[in-house]
Image 1 (cartoon, one colour):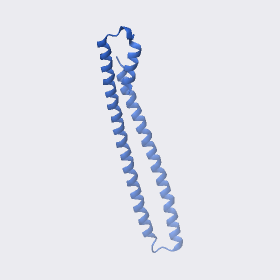
Image 2: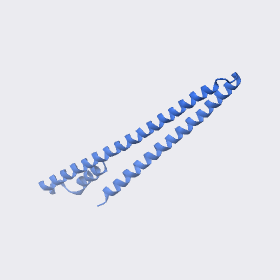
Image 3: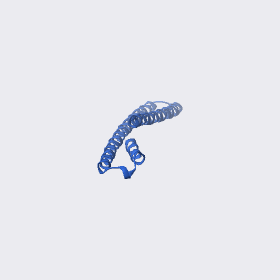
Image 4: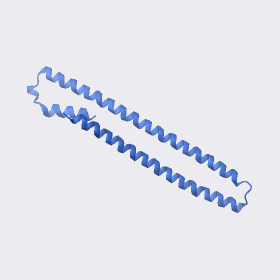
Length: 134
């Protein structure tokens, strides 16, 4: 969308309407249309990147949950044959470790999200810097 704002600003500040010929007006309209198409392409690309990133996060989350489920089932199977005291200790230890694993996973996802946002903002700034060059 940076291109649209740049061209719109140039139209507003670059010339007096009274001095624009009909051809110049049509040229400016054509430039604005081109800028809008570029903004559409940029928005679509950002959307695709975001959807791909969110899909990756969803897949990682589901894989994480599958591993936890398998670990829980294995832990419950391991409880069989243990004394009640041992069962409780194994059970409690498992859920303490699982809570730690969940916390680590959430922290990793938060860092991935922050990294994605930084990259997206850096890429947008780089595109706008290129667009604003004469």
